[in-house]
Image (spheres, rainbow over the protein chains, first blue to last red):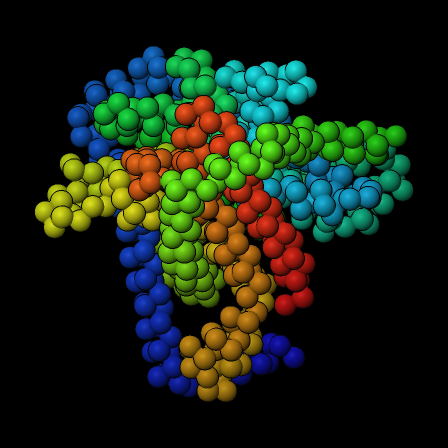
Length: 283
Length: 263
């Protein structure tokens, strides 16, 4: 039914050069709008950033990136982001599993709460964690101004990523495959490892990459709870902010370019995962 | 047994990271009664900060919505060279640190930046003023509408649109009568996410605003300023208002989401 309609439409479209012309004009218009908007909002500022980072020469760029304080901040940032992304991958998968396969009272409420970190301003997230895990903690846990606090804040802001990439895959996963595996004698663990896990792995990896990217760039939730002590709890974003405020935009730009490169790399990885999984589906 | 263990792990994780901290903030805010919280919220600088946040959001959200729809239509329906690049590039604001965004604008519109001289000669204040704050907010909230609309557009296919075109509808009619009604929930969902991001933006705005109290201080910057001035009750009170907005956003999202499948 649909195929003949489509071909009839194709014939009709081919027989109307005026319409094809209008189509081209609308494509050109929307591409023009997109290019203009993206150039003004995104590309020009980023070009200015890259340009400024090199304005004082290659040597100055490397000196800024490899200064001890900047290296310490970068190491902490990437290390903490990695730990948080790994924790997210595990706990996020468990949470997605419980939300899809388990059933208990209040599950739908829990399900909506997952998105709260996306909706909540990050500075509020930081303040929130300080209220529970700060100096005036009602449960006696004071992690304020430590690296543990950084992990907690990053866990908070990246919480939804893995859950939200794994959950839809689990929901749509065919029960028959699992039942077949079980009836052929596979244990519950083997079924998970050989049947379920390969299906949700792309989701876990995308969620992992997005959580990592978010954690590398995070600032709002950290400024209050991390204390921003150089060499100890100062992440790259806060370091960049400090460099701007102390009148060294070129140095700030150099470190910012490093973060920019990390972001681009992550986008490529996510794009590759997306490409691979859609291919896999078609095969 | 394993089921309960998993349930326990998931719920404990959510409680420790998400639910308990939020609960305690509500408790702490009203610990000293409503008076202190009200005083903090009714301070002129706080009211100005909320107004400024709303103004920025009211400008950034419509622009990004229109752009997001155009962009999604181009990605799904049109053919052009560099489409894959656009599809990947559009997500950059999600993967990039807001501070880097702020710094980029700072360098472009600052005194030594490419555009800085031009605006200075014409006596237009961009940096440390509303224009730069709007640009920063647009940047960080750019992809949400496009990202929500793209999968919906793919799913609905273009047969109805083509049928409308053969029956003589022009491009705009087809969009308004066929395409828009079928993507409306995705658009609304995207708008909600964009709004939440605009209201909560901190890092990019912190760099380009200059944080002048009563002038370029947004609600999120105000929270930090109150905290730094040792006015914890004030910081909590503003944070609570922002959290309540976030929770309303969440409720809206929950209401909108199930309808996606029925359109």
